[in-house]
Image (cartoon, helix red, strand yellow):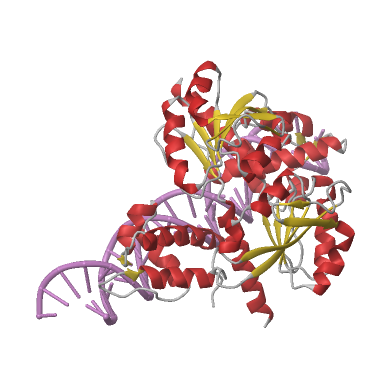
Amino acid sequence: MKKVSDAVIRRLPKYYRYLIELEREGVMKISSGELSEKMGLNASQIRQDFNCFGGFGQQGFGYHVEVLKNEIQSILNLDKKHNCIIVGMGNIGQALAGYANFMNEGFYIAATFDVNERLVGTTVNGCKILALDEMERFVQENVVEIGIICTPEAHAMEVVERMRRCGIRAIWNFAPIDIQLEGVTVENVHLSDSLYTLSYRLSEQKNNEE
Amino acid sequence: MKKVSDAVIRRLPKYYRYLIELEREGVMKISSGELSEKMGLNASQIRQDFNCFGGFGQQGFGYHVEVLKNEIQSILNLDKKHNCIIVGMGNIGQALAGYANFMNEGFYIAATFDVNERLVGTTVNGCKILALDEMERFVQENVVEIGIICTPEAHAMEVVERMRRCGIRAIWNFAPIDIQLEGVTVENVHLSDSLYTLSYRLSEQKNNEE
DNA sequence: TAGATTGTTAATCGATTAACAATC
DNA sequence: TAGATTGTTAATCGATTAACAATC
């Protein structure tokens, strides 16, 4: 199968959100035209996107909302359970541990780790915090697919390397570094980058008003 | 000035991060070629990007790290203080309130709000939580540039509308809805979208290995 | 059958990359 | 002056959009 471009992949969760919403509203079918209006995308683009993965529609009719939703859920691999671990249980780590939403879509925080001895042993948002030194053993004894990095910048790279060594192949990174590692899929979040772009557009807006 | 594309704007914080790093390492000058290797970008692209905002380099020499860093800081509007408020002090809201990093770059959490009576009046990460009903008054009495939305999906749109009405022109949105509003600049974060794309790429990786 | 809407090919647009003249 | 590297124009590439034949 031809490689699907990143732009398409990043639209999939958005389709998924809108389809869940439509299903909740009891809508049974939708055309690319209607969906394009709702989502602010081009109808051609929507059809092109779906056709990267096969034809989910019916000519002359449109798309069955439930079918399409299930297809995208399956493409995104959200119909399977994924064990995660969090390393770094500061503010962000604790928040993600409590982000109950994840479990609804098959993400489960199997364990959390920190180096801070005052945190180790405590329970936050239902997750017990273990000593970082126990990570390797835990990952060997349990199936862990996703490593979530919420450490300060200084420790992030070392944790990434340790995760890779014990077989974790997917990393969700919240530390402000760009991780690129052979054989490991990384999604960098970079919250501050996001805020900075907002700051840019705010000042741009002000300039236009002057 | 010609409108700068979103792709360029999203690279600015990344340049900024690398330049801060270089400055910290004591590097005085850098060429687009060296920077491209470090950042994994194309050198032409880097020069094109910088030239959207004017020529910061010196032919035959390269770029002064400090000068370039300061220019980008100024373009991103990070050399000014920005008051923010957070609405919704659940896990994510609390985490962002404590994300001390923001203040370093001029972002300051002036107040936080919630509807939950058990939270109102308490102090989290140094931020006192006020009742949501006090938001309008607070914004009128203080200069607030950025509204941060961390409410559940169901309340997000109403909060956005209230923020707009009391004059907030920039919104950093963590609720899982796409906000688009005339006259308001919105940066949608969508953490679960990000995790879903990681999930997709993880399954793709597994398929390739088979 | 006629109408609607998909799936897919072709055209357009914008972003990335290459090339090179300008110049420090 | 010669060498290096920018700033900028031109070429390429990929993503988006338009068009339309296929078909339900």
